[in-house]
Length: 103
Image (cartoon, rainbow, N blue to C red; front, side, top):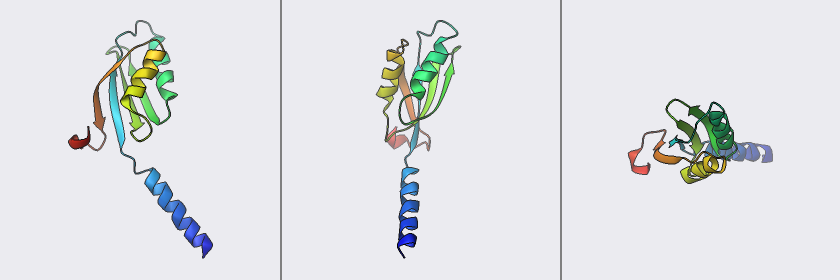
């Protein structure tokens, strides 16, 4: 009986943990001036707890970051790039499920 309760509880906790709505932030990183800058920005963002994926585009000078909104805020992403030497701004943060009421 205990093992059934434990398994059910573990399943519910896993389901609740995966229920967090992921967000995507598109950061403007205008100070990227060389080919190494995107690597530095990407590594800095990947170190932030709650970040799931990072794509940095040197041509458009942007970093697209998918993250768990319960673990990290967009302001923390901006701080990470700034601390790495490439200040950024976060003009666009969206919910991946397109709920405009919470963006």
